[in-house]
Image (cartoon, rainbow, N blue to C red):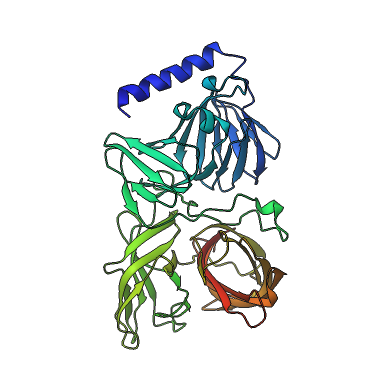
Length: 468
């Protein structure tokens, strides 16, 4: 769509908001679900917390912070907002008796969302617009998702129907099952086979075993450089990686030998390019020709996934290895601990993580939540919790943590129980504390289970970040 036409449509929508008070009532919809910390910011700058049942109105900006929210509009439309998302309802009007008057203009300022369009999108497609920093979406009655990344690029994915992605380079149509990344307002959409990881439409509160409020179900738990200066450069610190299968260990960590200091390097844009350790083994794993999916970098921790061919310099695993979209290498790195506590206890809440991998492919989207309970005065009393939900499985478990490396490194295993599995499942976790005063933690995890007697084991892996 030419810029002039888009500007005219915006002006028309604004005039409709001014002169059609019956159509543009204050209440555009309500909150179906919200975790703590989700707020609405009005045009006057006033902030109010949002909880289930809260009314939402045009002109308001929804800021999820580290939480998440699900919105239901009066036309039946649905929007699921992910952590670290800012979403503004610019204009909204719905008249069931006169569909030609229906219109909605939304603006995804940052973060990510999933949406299923309501009657406005079905009865007046020209009246539906969703703006982002790099492109504007027009729809044809559909379900689609948008994910923002730290480098400013935005990924669009269509689950059902079709969308038109338009910016200064022109317009491109994405059909069901297609995905594209738009790097800047001037760049054309680049089609990709990568699909964003997003939560199921059903909320965690509706599942049989509730996930924690901090459950990570998507790729958008990103704190960008615009908010916090990201980690950039080479550090002596902590790292952990995970993959569904070899090459490399399923849950890979530096050795406990104090002479082998773990290191990692992040590019100027905050992406992990290598990790390893010194000492006699002197191992370095490099990105090589692989690509990076960055899910977060907040100045203390960085996490993401590698897909493609990487190299490993170690004598016992020397060579190159290839990771695929179905089996990426998950990573989490963090600054070393300073001023380690020696007494008291702390609860670490999971505030971010990579999109989990599942093999064989899971039924439905995967949700993962986790927490750590660390007793600094008695480390042997520390525990972790891991919860996993898919379209067919909902399990959780709590296990003991064992510490090493001066109380910085930890690992643990647990039995997992719940619905949709045969018998019991199990989980394993490997991680480390990080940051000033052990303020943060990072870990990789694996959970496995059977859905029937004698059936194949399903395994889910990923990386998680926590903070007190």
